[in-house]
Each structure stands twice: as structure tokens, then as C-alpha cells.
Image 1 (cartoon, rainbow, N blue to C red):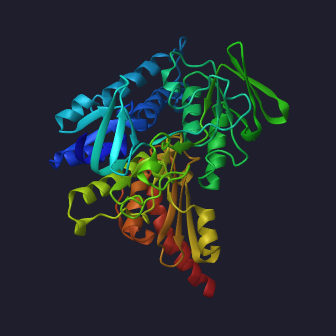
Image 2 (image 1 turned 120 degrees about the vertical axis):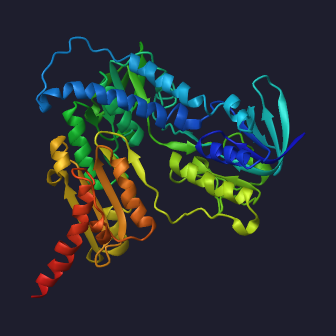
Image 3 (image 1 turned 90 degrees about the vertical axis):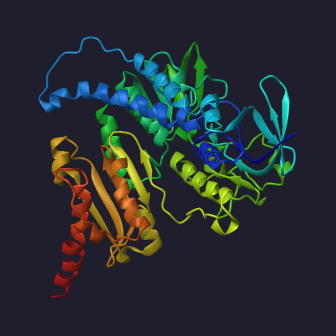
Length: 472
């Protein structure tokens, strides 16, 4: 039996942070991965989807030329090579995350499926059928998540796609159905539509991006309708029939929609199956593995990070978990690093326009604090000069604050590169900088960030001076 001071199970974003960081600190470490090094983000998520979205943006620019006074003819439109580009980018990035590159950094790797035999012992089943026994002083579970498939009639018998298989397509589908209107569904529906697919999006009664601010739904629906994406609600009641290479879906009012390919994007579930967590006496449920403020499970020598703990399933959150746990593993007990569980986690959906948010949205803040204690600043991009020059006047910034202090409780940004705008507000929230103080920050002109400064100006002009006028 081989012995290691630290073993990491899962070579995704969080697991790589721990493994590489420990190796750089001179620790002997073993990284176990059952298949795809780089995890979901590199192979099936962030990297392939954003690569495809980049191609889709170029295709859309050809369509929107006349809006900017540019007229031209495009007789032949072929987008199949964009999928080859996606796969090439995956391969390029994964080269830095696979065993040869990791071994050079001092990370020992083992490719196989790991399961617990006891709280300190693991069995790793290799592709050859052989089993390797491992003993570890400390273990980090970073096994990620997988697509959650709904119990929809006929779906199990159909060759549907998920984010883990759709990038293997050789051609852009002529007709693509997408079940689920969360971030993955919306991003890929719009991207494939721009690359030539006729897209039908089946969304729940809660609408597009249901976890975001209610105002976003109308903006996104308007944009997608402009791009001729078809919508149907109540996807929970839809059934699927696969016959003769085609998918037939029962939609609203018993209308049948036929598509050539079907993408299911209805959420994700933690990867805990097969780990034999009961043998390690690690508490868990179908929602994930509970952890404490230091990333520890109920077995304090076993940590869990990233998607496998449940909750928010973001690559950047997994990396954040990994950095905190790495510090705890490397330094003496008095330097253990707590996970910042109170810090608001930013999120971004990379549609057009992008949707980025952090903290509480308007409805959540009203429910928690009451409307009278809040000041909500809404800046439409029709008032932002940079947005006028780029034809993005339907976008907006909304910032939710406590009324008198202007402490930022949450923010939503909807525009191109909203994800790049959001950190200004996230940083202010992290260090308790009230919105009013952002009025002093000098922004280059013209930029989209001017909307944030305009919102900061409104604290004085609308909230304070407005209240004083009301007293007269």
C-alpha cells in the first residue's frame, strides 16, 4: 500500500489548485482523476462554451452590419469548423492540466476511479482492471458534478445531448431543441442559433434565468425573440419521442415540435456516487457533502471542495475553496484559513447581453429588509454614452443598497462584458465600501462603467436631496 501525506480526488479547478499548490510547497501529493483532467470547466463547461460563444459573436456581427451602416453580401455561411476550433482550444488548455505537465510540477498522478475502504484508505480501479491501494493522512474530495437529467417520459430512451456531449457534434444542428433556460441552456441556445441552428427553447413557468433579477427576463426574452429563438413554457410536462433519427417534443397546448438534436440543461448534481463515503464515515446526501468553515467534512482529515459540496456550482468558487483548504493543509494549525462563507459569490451568464450579478436581487432584498429601508438605483443604458455608440441601449445596471448608508447589498449588470464590470461592485461589497463613495472614482470616458458612477451620484441627488425636499 502506497502512503501519501495528501491525496486529492478529482483534477478539476479546485483539485488542481490544491495539488499544484502543495507540490510547489514541496509536499508529496497524489492527484487521482477518473478520466478528464481539467474537470468540467476545461472539457465540458467554461472553455468550450465560451469558445463557441466567441464564434457565434463573429457570426452575429455579420448579421448586424446594416445596423452600423455596413452593407455586404454573404452568400455562403458555414459554421461547422467552429466546433473543430472549440475542440482544439480544449486540447490546448488541457495540455497544461494533464499528467505529463503536472508531473513536471511535482504532482504525482493516478488515472482511475477512487473509492474509500476506510477513513484513510482508498482503492483506485485502473482502466486495466487492476486496483491500487492508497493510504492518505489528508484527503481532499474534489469530484465535481454531473448533468441532472429530469424524469421526463421518453427521455431515457432517446440519445439526448448534455453539455458533456454537445461539443462532440461534427456539424451545427439544423434544428436544435433545448430543455432548460438556466445559464447553460440560454448560452448554448443563443450560440447555436447564431451559428445557423433553428433553436427552440423549452423553459419552465419561472422563465429565462429564473434565479436572476425579474427585470432580466424581459430583456433576455426580447433579445432572443429578436434573434428568432422560439419559446415554449412548462417544460416540466413535456415528453420526448425519438423516432427515425428525430426528436418530437410535446409543447404548450399539445403542439408537437420536431428537432434533429436535443440538449438537456436542467441543472447539475454532485459526483458522490461510487466514492463509498459510508466506509469513510463521511456524512453526505444527494445534495452533496456538508463541510465546516474550513472545508472539512465530519471527518476532519477529509476535506471537500467545489461542486461536490452542493450549493453554488461555479468554477471560481471551487478555486476559492481550493486556495483556502491549501493554506490549511500547508500551514500550522493556528494559520488554518476559513472559507469566506459570508462573501457574496459573483455569477455571470455569457449570453448577449451578458448577465452578471452578486449578492441580493431586488425581490430578495425587499423580503429581507423591507422596501422602506432600501434604495434601489437603476441606470438604463440609454443614458450611457458608450452604450449608445454600440447599440446596447436595452441594457442596464441595478444596484440594491441600504437607503441612508448606501451599503451595497447586491447588484445586477446586463450588457456586453458585464462580467468585467461586476468586480468593481464585488470589491466594494467585500470591503464595505458604500455606493456613494464610488462617485469619487474616476472612470475613463466613455465606458460602460459610467453607469456605476451615475448610480453612485443618485445617492446624493435622489436619496438625500430628495428626502430634504420632501421635508419642506
